[in-house]
Length: 413
Image 1 (cartoon, one colour):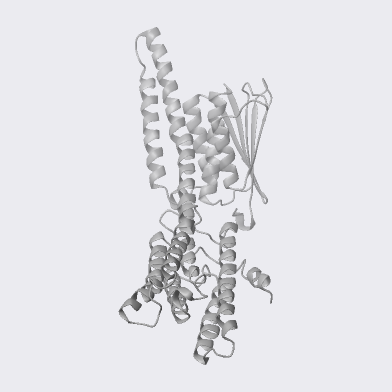
Image 2 (image 1 turned 90 degrees about the vertical axis):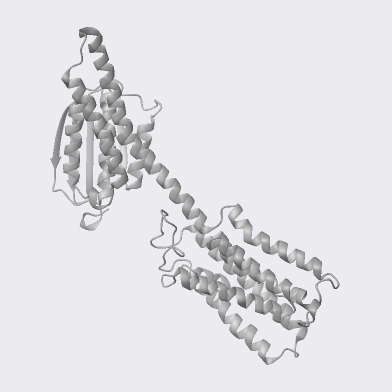
């Protein structure tokens, strides 16, 4: 099998995320993302060529004079180890963080032994010794990368330093150009250990970055759809109460009740977001939409006609919630921006999926008009659950939202 074929052979095995994902991070569930797969392939190629070059530089000049023990160790044990590392990537399903850490330490010790067995700073395996450091800096924590780097530098440079005291047969560090070689080697090791972190190539750092970004996006959606809408409702109620107060000189019990209810809803929304789990979201879509309709009738005074056709099916809780929040935003837009008086909402079930239609009799808008923050969040939510969202509107003739969510076998997305 050719080298390129070997790399392609393990491009898409059944895999999980490398190591233990940090708290709050996303976890890959089927195969590594393309950027990570490219890192594995690049590292495998570097490993192969660095080891092959080391073998050539070690054996070719010494043809016929290499001892059997050196031959068996370098070609046998070290060769088999490197082939296994190329063919079995560290994200294989049976791997664990502990196993991978132990393999990485073994690789660092192997690299140090190869370098020391073949001349120290004169060794043709100096470039190969960068491999375990690069593996740690790409896929492990920063402290692991530094520890592996210190281990290798201490072993290689320390061997030449120990020669001062007659502890081994290596050339002394101050002989010839060995001090220069040591400085160059330490600089190369430091670069390999630090560079992936500085250019955001480290796998765990990328996981944390992705997890933090997703959490910020989720918080932005929830704050907009829950808290911001409730605060906007409170602002409107207070403004109207103030107008009536100026006219009649008193606030009504209805005004106080509306404001109190809005404050309570804002509090419950925040608590719901903080305490939410998959189990707390397990409520039928038709029931959740019915609650939203009742809530919107009370808050906005809209006349909402709600109907359903077809046999309801079970939806994943998070999918149902995204659908509900899209509908909630649509109803809020009908009251706040479209100044509608009447809304018709339909929930249509079919074997292929579910369709939600929300049509108002408001003032509509031009398709070329700039879209607000709310619509962009609606589109974002639709994309997260694989749904398609169309907004049809003509100035003076109202607006219709059509949300289509296909379902697979068993009613699951």
